[in-house]
Every structure is written in C-alpha cells, then in structure tokens.
Amino acid sequence: MRDLAISLVIFGSLSFILLRPWIGVLMFAWISLMTPHRFAFGFAYDFPFAAIVAVVTLVGLFVTKDEVRLEPNAVVWLLILLPAWTCVTYIFALEPNAATGRLSEVLKVFLFVLVSAMVLHTRKHIEWMIWVIVISVGFFGVKGGAFTLLTGGGHRVYGPSGESFLSDNNAISVALIMVIPLMHYLRGESESKWIRRGLVAAMVLSGIAVLGTYSRGGLLAVSAMLIFLWFKSRRKVVFALLLIPLVPLAIMAMPESWFDRMNTIATYEEDASAMGRINAWKTAINIANDRPFVGGGFELYSGTTFARYAPDPEDVHAAHSVYFQMLGEHGYVGLLIFLSLGLAAWSTARRTIALARTRPQHAWAGQLARAFQVSLVGYAVGGMFVNIGYWDLMYYEIVIVVVACRLASAPARAVPSVAVNTGVPSVGPPRAGSAQQRAQ
Image (cartoon, rainbow, N blue to C red; front, side):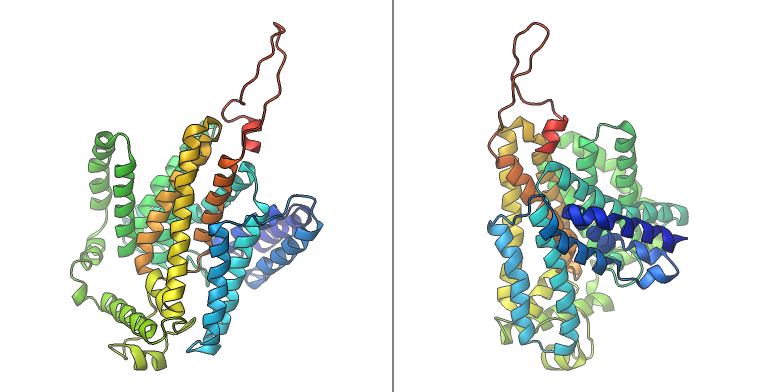
C-alpha cells in the first residue's frame, strides 16, 4: 500500500513538473531529504524516483514558459566553483575507485542546487521550498521527540533509514537544529492559528529529539545557537528568564546514560571515539600539508592512506568534521572556497536584513534572513563534528536567502490607484500578508 501511495504521488506530479520545473525542485528535495520511498517495503524501496524526477525537471527547463535564469553573483559563482574544484581534486584522488561514486553524488547535489537557483524566483517559490524542508526534516524531529518522551530518553534518535545524509544520529541532530529556525519563520508568517500551534509543537519536539540523538556536537550546536539568539535579541533579560528554567528542565529529564555521553566532552582523552576523530583531523592536516592544492580527493579514509599520513595508522576514521573533510579531501583551496561560500551567504543575509529595514513590504525577507543566520550558526558549530560538507540541505538554504535578497533589493513596483466609494483614489503598498505581496 505504501509503495502504491508513494508511486502515485511522485508519478502523478511528473506532468506538473514538466510545465513547472520549480515543482520538480521541490519534489527532488523531498525525495532527497526525507527519502519517503524508504518507508515502503516493496518495489518502491529501491526504485529510482529521484532520477526520474531529475530527468523530467531538466527536460522541463526547456519546455516550460516560466522564467528560467541563473543570475550571477558571488554566492552563485562559489556554488559553481566548489563542485568544479572537487572535479579537479578527483583527478588526483588517493582512492580513485571509491572517489568516483562520491563525485557522482556530489555533482547531482550541486546540479539541483543550481537548478533551484534557476527556477525559484518568487516569495511563493521559496516559501514552498521552506515548507518542503521543514516537513521533510521536521517529520523526524516530531517522531524523534515523541520517541524520546515515550522512552524517557533511554534510546537514541536516528534519521531516515538507508544511505541518506541524515541517517546518522549526529547528522539528524544538526539537521533538526538547522530546521528549527525555519519553523519559527513559518510560524511568524502563517495566518492560521492551528498551523502556528503545530509549528510550535514541532519546534519543541524537534528540540527534544536533538537531545535524544545523544549527539555531543548537537549539544554544542544548540548552545551556540542559543547564545547567538541571546546576543541578537532585543529583550535579553526576558530571553534569559525563559531559557534559565526551560533548558535545565529539559536536560534533567534525560537519563544517566545521556549525561555519561555528554560528560565525555570534557574528558575526550579517555573516549575512543573522540580520539579517533582527532586522529582523523591530524591526518587531514598532514594530507593537506603534503598536497596543499588538491588534498586527497573523495573517500580517502582507507588503511593505505592512514598508514601514510595518520599519527595512529591503525585507527581509521572518517573526518567527522565538515572543515577537516574539506581540508583533507580538497586541500587548502577547497577549504577556502567552502568558507568563502559560507561568508558570502552570511553577507547576503545581512544585506537582506538591512534592505528589509527600509522596505516594510519586504519585512518577511528580513525575518527569513535572520532565521537563515541562526540556521547557519547551527550548521557551522554542529559541522565541526560531522561529515556534512555535501549536504543539499545547507545549499538549498543558501539559494533561498539569495532569492530573498534579490526580491528585497528589487525596485518597488508602483501600485495602481483603487477607486473607493468616496471617489478619492488611494495609492499605497499592499497590506502585509496579502496576495500581491506574497507574489513578489
């Protein structure tokens, strides 16, 4: 039954995708982030839904009458440069056979990130995209939060099954941290009290799910995000008074095993997992120092590579850090491109916030940019302990804030006069939340 339902939804959307490629981007993101076919038990489990949606979307770019364009700016050029550089480092990969499969995955991710930048042009487009992200990742937050409450935190929360980027407990914790600010944005923009209440419940359950992942990186990311929010808050005292009772209450509800896990942050020298990560980080530095421009290429984590570069050649680990992942796999050049992309996206968000202050009709864009900044802080801190350099989630968020900035910086459109009963024409911007404003 699940196989048929999922197939009907996806195949039923193909005709719409052909005429409206932006719908194809939404569908591809849903399949990639949520992997709904993994909830089936029959033919749909391994069916290439993503490939079919991708092909139809790409064909739709040439068929549609909708606007298809890629507006160049610093962020877009870096979104092109980063995957291009991974192609260069692939040529010099230490493990070429393993690197081939990863290169294919990464190029698919960036291809559709760029396609999304080509077809998402309106507020409606990006808010639909945000809803897809929130539902896809938030589903596991609601499910994981309820699971944590029912089990008293006695078992870990994981992401979707299969080979998803979000399967690992550390990865899903960072994803939930990134999505909670987007939930908050949607709550503020929604006119339905039931949707607002549902989003508040989803935020609370997702926060509980983060604790339930037992992710030490997730805990640090949440802490960094809360500190950032406190600094940005105009009501710091009220914000602190709310956090002081709530945070300890949530933490104290967790079992002893959770505290044992978190305490290893301070005693990392005694934790084999932590020391394995440090060994992998030093290995990445050694590879980058030996091959500063190209690094070791994708999937360099093998016994052969560690025997050559690792302080402890017997302890073979993945980088478990987005920064050392980029450094080890793509050298100092790759790391510089990656960091430049993050800084350019942050700068775009700041510009959007500044524009929104002077253009009340684009206040929504400023709120979205603030949510993105909080999300980026969670990614930057949580990414210190997870291999998430090629996550489409982060890159989709970057595209969203770029589109929001473009909309906020567009020249104000003249609003036609409207005759009223008195016969006096009235000119002014559309009311906040109106159809005209949302179409911009």
